[in-house]
Image (cartoon, rainbow, N blue to C red; front, side, top):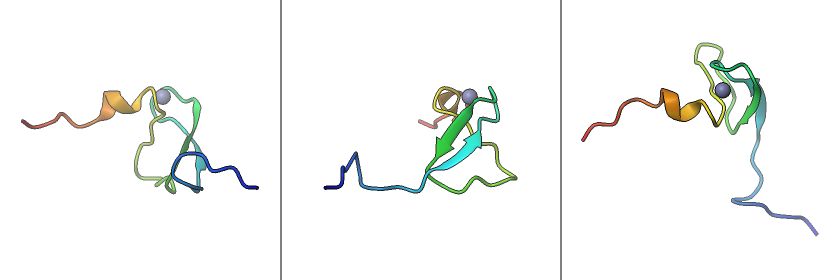
Length: 51
Ligand SMILES: [Zn+2]
């Protein structure tokens, strides 16, 4: 029996956070031209929301 976690299997790619430098995994292929952030840093780099 296969264990199903949240929304099924996903391709996770190991990369490094562009902010703190810690190893993290993202559900997409990291683009060399774009910074990738870990879960801790991601909220800090979200574009300001318009209201
Ligand atoms: Zn980070």
